[in-house]
Structure formats: structure tokens, C-alpha cells
Amino acid sequence: MYYAKNASSLEGSATLLYTARAASMKAAGADVISLTAGQPDFPTPKAALDAAKKAMDEGKTLYTPSMGIMELRQAVADKWSKVHNQNYKVENSMVSCGAKHSIANMLEVVVSPGDKVLLPKPYWVSYPQMVRRLGGITVFPESQGMLITGDDIRKAAAAGARGMILNSPCNPSGLVNTADSMEDIAAAVKETGIWVISDDIYEDLYYGSGKVPHILSADPDLRDQVALITGVSKTYAMTGWRIGFATANPDWIKIAGRIQAHSTSNPCSISQYAALAVVRGEAEAERIHMYKAFRRRRDLICNLLDGVKDLEFEKPEGAFYVYPRIKTDKKVNTENFCIALLEKGGLGTIPGSAFGNEGFIRLSFAASDDDIVEAVKRLKDYLERGDFI
Ligand SMILES: Cc1ncc(COP(=O)(O)O)c(C=O)c1O
Image 1 (cartoon, helix red, strand yellow):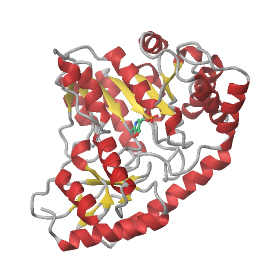
Image 2 (image 1 turned 60 degrees about the vertical axis):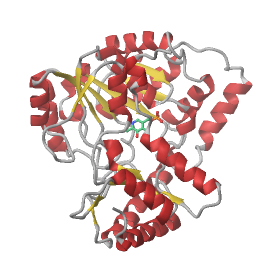
Image 3 (image 1 turned 90 degrees about the horizontal axis):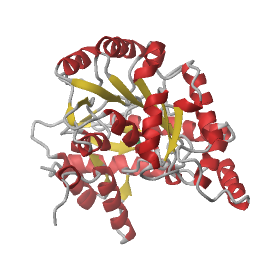
């Protein structure tokens, strides 16, 4: 049987793999704590549940327009106009089956086979695979820092990169570009004319002061070459509802809409009504409660990790991940490290190799305080045993 080259060379999602492995050991009765999760450990807010029930009772269970119901597209355009001081209209926005789907659609519009796409490192696990699926070529920044610079963009563009995916707050590092670094990036994007997909899925989980720095705040005139990706998954504990949003120039959205019309059609009608409720602000109390819990747990895990001498890390300013580097002179294969840590140390984590960095591990603090405390203890004990090579 012949399988298409781009499809058959795709790699599986390492985050899903390690999460599933920890979950199956736990289900089999093993004493395992998992800090692998990429999702809030809270229930979906009641306003979303009520809106979904109402939608079902009212028979809103058939096809919707394939780009999403008008009320939701309008609410998305209004909300992100306000956030970014723009005047997006319905034709600037589109609803898909999760932010992952939004990114895949938007990429498909701008990547032809052989096109180069710049991916800052560490990158979210799906970006390289999404680019390669389209026959695109992934390009990584020259500088070794944890955040991309304007010069990295200029060099990549000079070598042929047509666009980039920006993700701040970043999964896996939790790091956030400062306002100055966003200005540096925006200047290079303007100069080079590349497109940008700004994956803002963690924008509401920002622990710094004021508004999270953004490329469109640095330069609002870039709006036609920047696509915003947002959603309800992380902010509102709605990962299973599969709703994501793209906001961009009307042509980019129109073509992405055609791709969606010929692939999935509309995202789940019931989920769209649930998302409408939260985007309109009906779950603010729960959103703030979750945000505060994540901020407090960020401080908890960082304080605990400060006491682990074999690790070094930058304190995350957003999302719900911390990304320490294992300090050792020995060469560590982090995949083997994470498997052994799970099997011998009873702790599930994700290896940095999944995000383009060897030597790092990702810990999610979307977990209870007790689990965080016990997890760091297990990690410390495991490192102190020193048998991880
Ligand atoms: C950086 C990043 N972008 C996009 C997504 C996808 O979000 P969704 O569940 O809405 O598809 C995730 C989920 O883990 C993510 O971490």
C-alpha cells in the first residue's frame, strides 16, 4: 500500500504520547503523578454548560454556517478588536474545531510545498509537523536564546522564510516576550514583509503586570500580515469542546473558510453556543478563579524547584508550564530521562526534545498543590539518585 510522503512521514504528538503513558500506568494502579497535562484541571464554567443545554433544547443541533455562527464570529471580532485596539469585522474572524485546527487552516493558506517557515525554539510540538504536512520547510532561529529576536527574523527571511509562528506566552517555556522584544520583532516583520501566525492561546494566562505584550501592540499597522489565534480551551477549561478562533485579514480568512468548508464543515454547533457565552463574558468569575489558582501554583512550583540544585530555569510569566534544564556535564537523552523518571520515579513529564531542545523537561502546573509538592520531591529524589543516564 502506498502512503503519501508528507502524511506518512508525520511524527505523533509527544505530549499526547507521554500524557497517555502516565495515564495508563495510573489506571493500572501504579503510584504515578502526572505533570504532563496541557489543560486546566478545572471544570468548564456553568455559563458554558447552560448555554450548551439551551442550544440542545432549542434544536440548535444541525449544521451551522461552515465558518461558524454569525453571533460568535461577531463576538470574536468585537472582543479581539477591543484587546488589540483594532476594528475587526465578521469577515475578519472564523471559528474552527480548536485552536490547533485554526492554526492548521491558516497555515494551509500561506504555505506551499517548498516554502520556508521560521519556528522560534522551543516550539509547540505540533508546529513543525503542521508545516511539514503541507510540504513546507521548517527553519529554526540562529540565536540560541529562549526567545526569538528581530535579527533571527531578518536572517531567516534573507534565507527565504516567508512567515513565522509566534507563541507568547510560550508552550513549553511559559516565557513571554517583553514589550521591547515585541517591538524588535515587529520592526523585523515590517521590514521583511513576512506573515505571522500569532498563537495567543495562553494570552489570558499572563502573570506579569498590565497587558501581555503583543506584536500588534508594538505595531498595529501589521494587522494585515498577522493572524491571531485564540480560543476557549485554556482560558475557560474547555479543551474538549473543540472551539478555536482565527482573526486576520478578510482574504486570509475567506480562503481558510473554504478549506474548512471542504474538510470539517462547521465546528460542533452546541460547542459554538457554549463558547459564545464565555466570549461574551458570562464566565468571568470562573476565569479569574482559575487564573489566580495558576498564578499561585506557578509561585509554588518555582519556589520548590529553586531548592533542586540539579535544575535551572527561568520563572514562567505565562501559561501553566515551567521548563527547567537539567544541569549536568553528562549528555542526557531527555526522552530516556522522562521515561525512566516515569517508570522508576513515578513522575510523568514531557521531554524537551519534543519542543526542539535537548536537556530540558516540561512540567505542567495544571495540577493540585499536593501533586505539585510530591512531584518536585520525586524529581529531586530521582536527580539525587543520579542514575538517569
Ligand atoms: C501553544 C498551543 N497552541 C494551540 C493549542 C491548541 O489548543 P486547542 O485545544 O484549542 O486546539 C495548544 C494546546 O495544547 C497549545 O499549547
